Amino acid sequence: LAKTTQPISMDSYEGQEVNITCSHNNIATNDYITWYQQFPSQGPRFIIQGYKTKVTNEVASLFIPADRKSSTLSLPRVSLSDTAVYYCLVGDMANDYKLSFGAGTTVTVRA
Amino acid sequence: DTAVSQTPKYLVTQMGNDKSIKCEQNLGHDTMYWYKQDSKKFLKIMFSYNNKELIINETVPNRFSPKSPDKAHLNLHINSLELGDSAVYFCASSPLQRGYNEQFFGPGTRLTVL
Image (tube, rainbow over all chains, first blue to last red; front, side, top):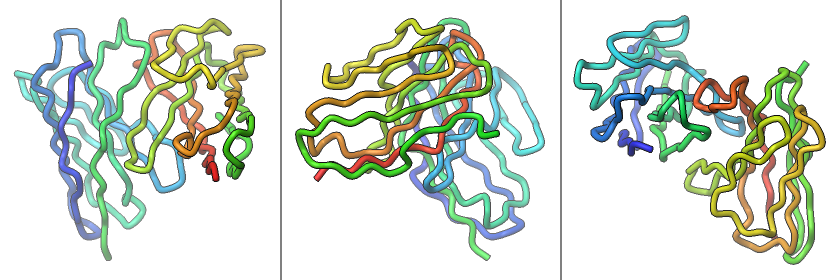
């Protein structure tokens, strides 16, 4: 599984946009990029997944440059309830049976 | 109508005891997983079952034994508990055998070994 590197923590304020960048220099051709969110005392929750360019859903956007060696999760207009740990994962969607979580990025949103 | 449920939510026990954690999913998924999250928040996969068949067994002591009576249940039995087993254990399920699609996690079981 490709190794990922994310910032350990980020602080933000309500209403701001939060961008979390994940580095995955060894990403393979078949690998997809997936982000999970984990609130305290809860299990991780799938946010978004993409292969290249941009993916957007009701929760977030995922930007992936052409070389795919990094990706950026964008959370628009965060609220206090977006305070959580965000995990970036990279793996082969066709052949991988497991998820490998790193330490994640702790995002703290303040009023 | 909880999707993935685990019992108990908290488990406090003495070293050397044997305990079990139960997991059930009502999503109709074929694949289920057990993860361990340590104090540093790293989440590591332990086991995965697909249609009651073991497909992933990471380097986990054989004191840990998963059991899948049917594809909706994956229980985790731990023998001779040790201090280092203290962690939060998460059960998860996914709709496809190749688990890199979305996985649905349970609320976790916080195990404390004294």
